[in-house]
Image 1 (cartoon, rainbow, N blue to C red):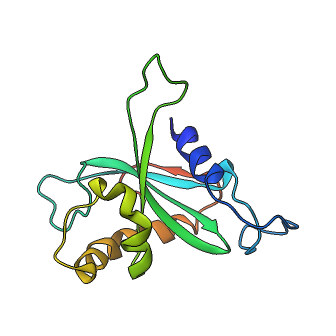
Image 2 (cartoon, one colour):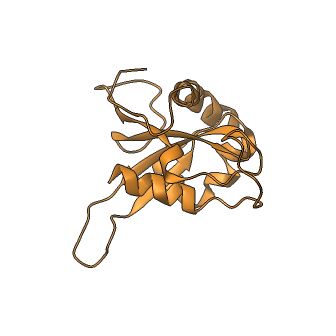
Length: 146
């Protein structure tokens, strides 16, 4: 299931084809093995939890040369689909990413009064996700390891 989520992210990212000297190259197309991930679970009545679900995957990979953090929820697999459904949001303190880039999946993000409130909720998770990008490609960490 985790590999599928990584494949989905990498397949959905478009970049200009070019030589691939390193994953931080702005023109490199991410691959499924580039994703680092950690399972996150809400701790009881944890204040500041920005998601509407209690658990999911925090993921990081380099997109267009910069570390990009995602929160993903992998749905239940059924006999009608080859792969389980995956919903994800970009976890960012950039106003564009925090709002417009997540418009289609706002049901995964708690409602806030304004963009600043959303960015404040995302900030600690973005920092944690960026620390994931410091790990080797393909790293899968358990809860509480970062």
